Length: 277
Image (cartoon, rainbow, N blue to C red):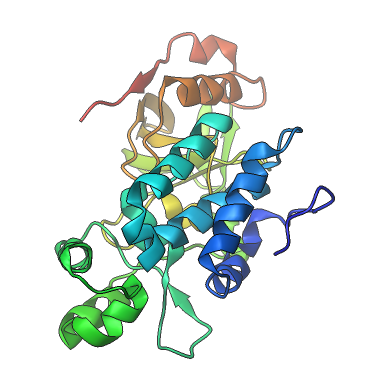
């Protein structure tokens, strides 16, 4: 995508398309794209930041990123400082950027980057003298069984047509997920920025995480809440992917305190608790 002052950024559901486009762009073009977004005089909409974040994740997985890890990290930090959104941390670049199912495939898959196999492969690549990108490295230097594992143990991204099953609504101080009263359980959630929607579901390690709701896009806040008898009992800013801070918790608190949601009275008794690991 060519970035100009008049660029109209697509909505975030286009991330799947962006994955394919970004993989065709040169390193210098990706770096320039991120810097263009950062230097904009006017505030960028969240789709622009989503594109920039995806570009940085792709750079992490390239030989350029391997050689210039400090520069890539600085770009990631810069976009995180320039916007109030939560971005996936650098460690999850393998998942966010994704890898092609095979060399000429247009399908991009998103391996669970925190599995022991993924961590071992990443370390093998980082410690090697190979000038190949991680994707090229997988084809030539990694055991076939490990490659197969990465391609079968992937994060499921919810399609826009099915996102309604995770939409959170409120009625008389009680919570509904997908129009149904949830079980007594801990649920992970993300608060989108545009549109302002709260999405929730039960985490399944290695396949269904916070990024599943938004295809890895940045969010206004992420975390977990405990449900008991249809009510929100506690809220915790816990997300390994997004690492939300107290400022993100304030955005969530303000959203939940709206009359159409939990309302100010209930939120006066509830705290959005920070998480430390």
